[in-house]
Amino acid sequence: MRAVVLAATMVVLLGGCGGDAPGARAGGAADSAPRFEADTQLVRDSLGNELMIISKRTAHLLPRELRARAGAGDPDAPDAWRVVDPRTARSLMQSARPPWYVIDVRDSRGYVTRGHLANAALVPLEVLEDNVTDLHVRTDQIVLVYADDEARATAAAKILAGYGFPHLRVLGGGLEAWAREGLPVEGR
Image 1 (spheres, helix red, strand yellow):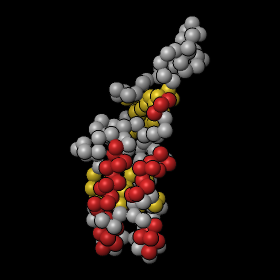
Image 2 (cartoon, one colour; image 1 turned 90 degrees about the vertical axis):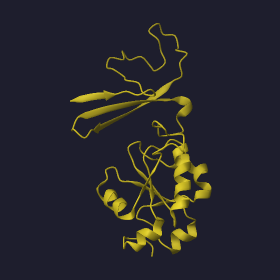
Image 3 (spheres, rainbow, N blue to C red; image 1 turned 135 degrees about the vertical axis):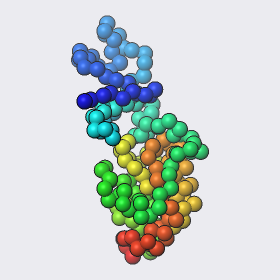
Image 4 (cartoon, rainbow, N blue to C red; image 1 turned 45 degrees about the vertical axis):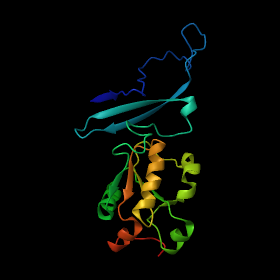
């Protein structure tokens, strides 16, 4: 069974476009509406139904690869991100498809001297907002943000939530809690 999911910022493209280019009317005149690209995903819900999600992305919003979910764009919204303890994070990361996108928001000295999580991208908090468009995160990918402590990672999650990242997790207790649990740290 295939369903098509709709939301306020999404559009459904039904078959038979007739070969028209986006923005063209039947009479051949250019449409005054902004041009858009469609982002299509196939996902399965908890009942095993296949869902086709077609997102409309207007041209002026294209630099952001993610479309905001309800409440996103407001970093103070409830559930803009969740704090997850190290053992739970490790367990979820091992079975996740696609793999979690892990961001270390410490400085480069901490990344090298105290180690880091496997496959973590180093984006110091001070330059995170300047580099947010360089984070090529899929719309269905969970982003785990961590630092030495939870406060710095929470500040980074607040920035990312403001840009509409839909699936944010903060490592509870930071890298110190991860290491105390005996979980693997690379570069130590």
